[in-house]
View 1 (cartoon, rainbow, N blue to C red):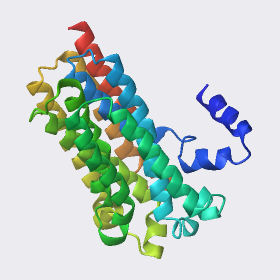
View 2 (tube, helix red, strand yellow):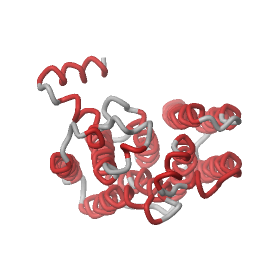
View 3 (cartoon, rainbow, N blue to C red):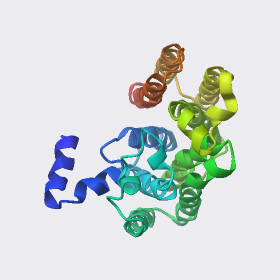
Length: 296
């Protein structure tokens, strides 16, 4: 159904598909990876029953801001993507979309997202500026630091404090356990992503945790994933979550174990598939949360 909708949009205008690809709407994995932790926070903040208004705001906001992040990332990388085999056909790198058009689209997406945030409260509005700043500066980090994945982790976790303030009007200290857990998890899965591009990145002088970690990459990823699960266990204790939440964490741990095993050859495709597979870990944790609140 989702694919049919995108192709229907494509028929409305001959260039629609170029912008769909620029926003990566044809590859929704990034939406899922941003959505699941945001929903974790929304469910915990609301005690299992988030308001319909906030649920709609954050689901639509995730889609818009992930699209905005992809647009500004491709704008920043437009002179590099043509040299990377996996990204050389992207709309900006191939010239199908002009840089000015990308900036206008980014501004539109951020503007729409801000309109959604205005439907919440003042604290959430103020927090939203931090999210936009992280999304805008992330693409530049790979030029200056080996830790762009940490900045991405903060950007992908920013919906967590926003969900708490939108739902409750406050931000408890325990919420930062969820933030830290997601940051660690994001660094882990985006390192798998960077491992798929490592050889190309080395040739063109870009930096990443995959390059920094070197031969220890998979071990460090597994350690980060373990620490993320530990933070989630601590959060579960503070928020008094029970059996089903812990079963969700167990399933996520199984996903992480499969990723470690499947990347033993460090082949680019295997690393990319491990990155994609993290969607299932996030979904397992979310299902565990929903079941825990619904069945307790």
